[in-house]
Structures are given as structure tokens and as C-alpha cells.
Length: 121
Image 1: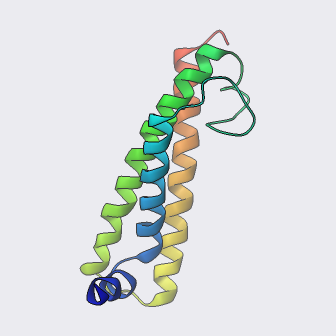
Image 2: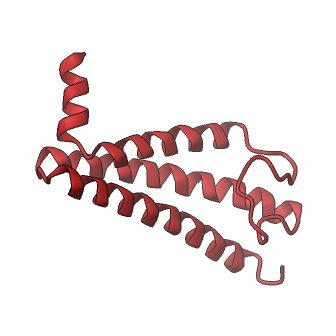
């Protein structure tokens, strides 16, 4: 077990791995227990997604699926650390950049899907 932890911390891009696992767990919880009604506490909450209940339900499912895909992407990318061995500073920069890009992609793709599927809203 100790060797496995050393492998994760030293050989993998640790930040994308950890954030990817968190995204996967969060997406699975959101898919299993989606928010039933529009609220300001839980779920994908933007101005477009909170316009009506139909848009809300679509946004919750779509964003959860995209988050699951993004989480798996981050976990897979983290295994590139087994092939490439950049120094710690570069690992942190790559980890932050990938995490930020995935978050931007998640919001951008969900908002685009809302506008495409609900053009009159």
C-alpha cells in the first residue's frame, strides 16, 4: 500500500488525478441524487439553467455527464506522469492549467447545450 501511495505522489501528476477522482465521485452523486427543484444550494446553478424546471432538469443531467467525462479525462492524463517526469513546478502548473481548462470546458459546453436545446428561453 505504501508503494502505491509513493507511486501516486511521486510518479503521477497528483493534482489532475485527485481533482479527476473528485469530479467522478461528484458526478456519480449528482447523477444518482439530482436536485428535484430549482434551488440555490445544490446542482448546476447558472442564470440560464435556473430559468424553468425543464431547463433545470436538462442542465443537471448534462453537466453531471460532462463532469464524469472530464473526471475520467483528468485521471487518464494524470497517468502521463508515469511516462514523463517533469519537475515539481511544472507539474503544479500543468495541474492547475488542466483543472482550470476542464472547469471552463464544463461550463462552456453545458451553457452551449442549454442554448441549443432551449433557444426560446
